[in-house]
Length: 79
Image (cartoon, rainbow, N blue to C red; front, side, top):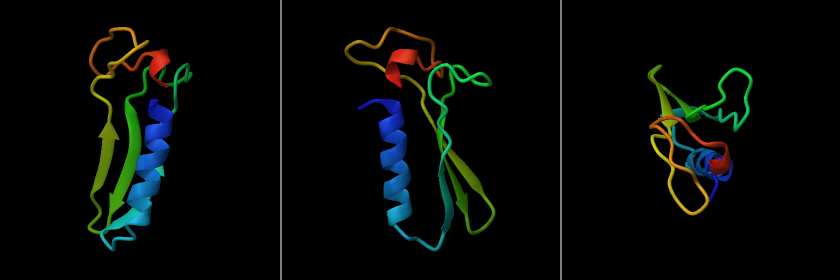
């Protein structure tokens, strides 16, 4: 599964929980080649009822066709 598809799936799954504590779930992935964040590793943002904010980040991506890269540096092929 590529990261964009994973971000969309995770956003939909968290939203479907319809939990009182999760007030906003947002796909914030930018993908490869973003002008502002070319190696964006933040993919989903969650706002909580108590005012806290969580961000799901990608630490490392591995698999067939994915070149080695530094931690938190998402290669284009992973999107």
